[in-house]
Amino acid sequence: MKVIIPTTPLIERIIGPQKRVEGQRYRLMTYVVQQPVDDGVLLYNTLTCSLVLLTPDEAADITAQQELIDRWFLVPQEHDDQKACREIRQLTALFMPTEEVITLYTILTTTGCNARCFYCFEKGTKSVSMTAETASKVVHYIVAHRGDEEVSLKWFGGEPLVNAKVIDQICTELREQGVPFRSIMTSNGYLFDADKVQRAKDLWQLRRVQITLDGTEQTYNRVKAYVYQGVNAFERVLQNIGMLTAAGIHVSIRLNVDNYNIKEMATLVELLHQRFGTNEHLTVYSHVIYGERSPEDNAELFAQRMQLEQQIAQCGYKRTQGLPKAIKTHYCGADDDRSVLIAPDGHLGKCNHYIDCEFFGHIDSEERDEAILRKFKERRPDIKGCATCFYYPQCILLTMCEIDVGCTPEYHQEHLHDIKESMKYEYERYKML
Image 1 (cartoon, rainbow, N blue to C red):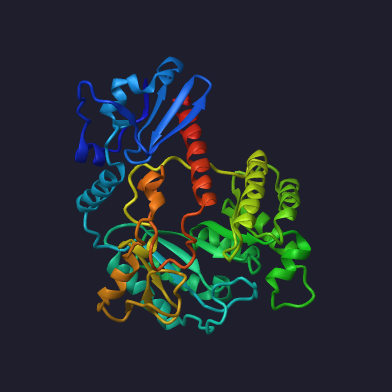
Image 2: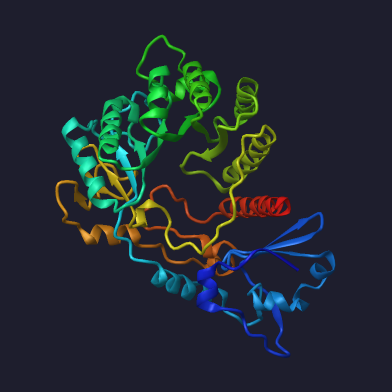
């Protein structure tokens, strides 16, 4: 047996090696995922975050491998995996240092937008743009709460480029204060031009921008419904993607899919490949538009998405992520003490799906509504399927999450697919060492 990734140090500290019991019958832990490769079988434990390789002979008699007992891949038949996972998660959280600094700032430059997407979760939100005075206060807040660490800025909206001047201002003042920072952006991409791309690279320290495409030209222009007349928005956005990648700024294209447009997405991916070729600064992935569907529609859409993802990978636009290196203790910025959202008027929140409510404070004050902060950390109760789910140690569902659709067969299959792809990716990296 080869250890590709050892048990994460904190979990090793908490539980240590498992003691062997003579005559005990063992089984694979619920959280173990198997993936055959050319020279054996990979095993990954989503609880201990360890990855090992078994030879074909070892894989043929897994329960006889004593080292798998030591490393918690094998557990006694009667072992309560779910209970152990909950206890380890609680202990892991206790060992984590108390966060006293904020390093991730989601900054809404405006709630206004130049597009009118029918599915937008911000539909009906009053349009408010950040003023120069508030932008300066944002800088003061960041300086006061970052400690000595570099900060990450996420520009969000509305469409953040509708109010690009406050991005310029905040970045300029942070530089003047000697604050190291980098930024990312969620944008529809329409308002970029050569000047903004240069500022994004040099002043904004923009490393990545997420841009959504909703289909080929006709569908895209219809869905986005930009406020401008007589322009081909689809072509303009593609030109801007080209400018951004040429400047070394990574573009992550999100293909928003539903039953109405999934069939044309293969054509769109081919168009992107013809236009941009193999591009190290470009990734593409599909994302389901949230909404009510029948189980049959969900299953069909998932199958079509998996075909689409395979095409994306063949074009070189899929970037496989490494495996989780620790048990998950928080879901996202909403339940992470190091993260904060700053609304255009200076109110402080925790989630970009709550941009006009559920605020816990304001940049003008150190007062915090602890009840709101606790509210964003509340987790949904376990369901019956959690007891047998391989992904349980890495799965957190928050009560306040408006976009989380909960556990479905497709959700389970997608995570299993991603874990297996990451296992192969980590093993290929290991072989190159």
